[in-house]
Amino acid sequence: MLDYKLLEALAAIVDQGGFERGAQQLNLTQSAVSQRIKLLEARLGQPVVVRTPRLLPTPLGQRLLNHAQQVRLLEHDLLDRIPALGEGTQRLRLAINADSLATWWAPTIGDFCHRRGVLLDLVVDDQEVALRRMRDGEVAGCICATARPVQGARARALGRMRYRVAASPGFAERYFVEGVSTQALARAPAILYGPDDRLQQRYLDSQGFKEPFPHHLCPSSEGVLHMVLAGIGYALIPECQAQAAFERGELVDLDPSRPLDVPLYWHFWRHGGELLDALTVHLFSASDDWLLPMETSASAGA
Amino acid sequence: MLDYKLLEALAAIVDQGGFERGAQQLNLTQSAVSQRIKLLEARLGQPVVVRTPRLLPTPLGQRLLNHAQQVRLLEHDLLDRIPALGEGTQRLRLAINADSLATWWAPTIGDFCHRRGVLLDLVVDDQEVALRRMRDGEVAGCICATARPVQGARARALGRMRYRVAASPGFAERYFVEGVSTQALARAPAILYGPDDRLQQRYLDSQGFKEPFPHHLCPSSEGVLHMVLAGIGYALIPECQAQAAFERGELVDLDPSRPLDVPLYWHFWRHGGELLDALTVHLFSASDDWLLPMETSASAGA
Image (cartoon, chains in turn cyan, orange):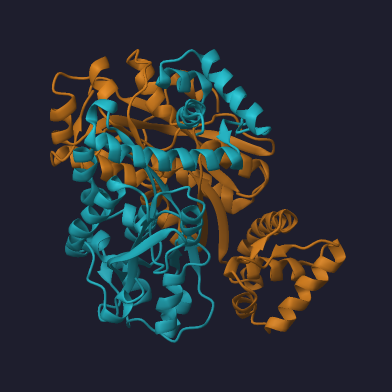
């Protein structure tokens, strides 16, 4: 078997961002940790970390870390049955789409983290990057709009996130006083999450609108909401994120009869161990309050 | 002089994420736009964009785009005086720190965008990346905690953002019932923005705490807030972001006598034209409502 002491040293220095703090985490001297990394690199004949500009794993180091994480998840199952073996705290690295993180994720997961002593390493990515991370084994699970699992993983439909076309009352008055029209869409600045914002494109397609339109770019879910509240543009906002502002009259729905729904899927390692399976069960029992049920045709993909 | 028709074609396809939509933006056929890009690449002897997995500028293409943006800013000054020359809409690419985007940025800038017909391309980065983007000319301005301007730019102190050590009442009850102590900090999960979260480190240093501590990672300003609200951990949260939750009793301040202040600086191109200068004036008149004045010693760096 591999020498897990060496992998543990690697995980600690990467986790803590340095040799000194990594050594503290392991209750070792810095020189002992350096020795282990040197030994690991000597055995492999390649570096496992780069030191500058800041400490980061090399691609090889990352593969070792992924393996170590998988082993830890399996160990966690064992520790559940033999608690005396370990302290029972477990890190779980997951990729989450920005709108989920800004809305239903934290309230849904809070209780689970506390109950199971889980520490989360979240990464926020667009879905292509998130699926690549799944494929590379870099994350143990991800939430995205793609139904098809990567190899070695499963995907389950969580539900639909509903989006509303939202604007401040002043902005609506200025640009959309006669409702949503081709003229209005050609003039009113939209706020997009990124240059290839598919949701905005889907909305414009649904309107038969194919012309260029002015737009701001803001790669932050809450940043978009704040910009809409400030009257800078209109945007597609998750209904559950905008609801309170709709009720307070701070936002208006420009197109109430035409919400857009995005299906969300939970992808997770097939052999990720009991903790990941328990998280899966928990997500499905708790996300109902926030997401709409899948339509029959859409859920078939899962 | 350079053939700006070619640069304009490059900017349009990158801006719109494809040749077809780029051509629409310019009211040209797709084949005319392809011709221009081919001509540009033939003259340079190098590609300016990569097509897969999605259309992105090469480093050379990016340098051309930066130059085109600078020229446009200068043109904008001209157009202000000779409005018949153009339509007067102007894109401004800026790097903003996540906490500013989640709090004071949008309310402060909204009116300016509308009045001046400005469209924003925002990027969210940690400050090292933001300053690199300034240095590379990729953004016209940035907001970060570093006082020292990069070459060709100026930096001005905007004010201090105040952070509070926040937790949900339930979390505070569970871990901090006897206040902030070494024991409590060693047990209570913190929520960090990233592995080298300097603010958390500064807070722990101020407590004389040097041991490892459990932590979640969440690279989203509002994600951190939501996780704190959900009782998953404690975190340093901008006071202006947490204020409403403090007042509603959804969050408590774990260490009211010890807020942490982070100075914020506005970096902008020295010869960025009248629009950028006007934005600078606007930012200084409007950010007062959200940021505390600089302390005398800290403002000297600007």
